[in-house]
Amino acid sequence: MAREKLIKLEQQEQEFVNHYAELGFANPDEMIKKGLHLLKEELNYHAQLAQSADLYAELYDEDEKLKEWTESATQDWD
Image (cartoon, rainbow, N blue to C red; front, side, top):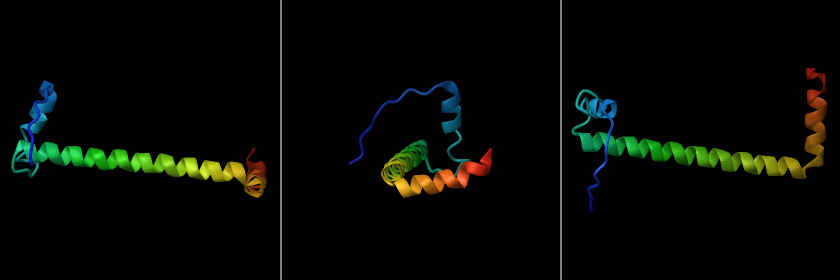
């Protein structure tokens, strides 16, 4: 079931939404929904990246051999 929500847009945002047809959308609602969907996907992607980075950091902290390999590989970087 669709629900309505009143949102306030700045003039620049409103002008952008007014071009919905030129951007291939049937109506402004379709355009806004697509934008929200893309934002949700982007936020989920970044959350997954952060979780993955945390897991890799945890594995690195627990693996002394990996630390040795990393240190030996980076010694000549100076």
